[in-house]
Image 1 (cartoon, rainbow, N blue to C red):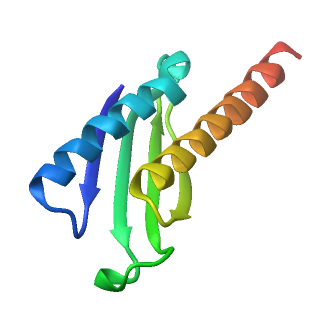
Image 2: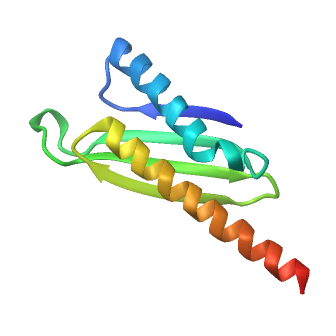
Length: 107
């Protein structure tokens, strides 16, 4: 599973630290689903700019192995929290979608 991250408004050291945290979080949330997920792209943006507030958005786009993609979005006041929530929601979507496909194949 490959991970890419695009962040707007983060300096170098913060970007590297957040990328490491996001990689660990992606592994924890999607590690068991690695056979179903080909890649993950995280897009981080600050909706309010330098004003602060609860407007840090993380959009997680997952490319599935069999084709197709899933998108999960989270809004928070903390980068790490926004990434964690988006990846957790994405893992739930992967389980739901691939589980549904497998149950249909059994019939």
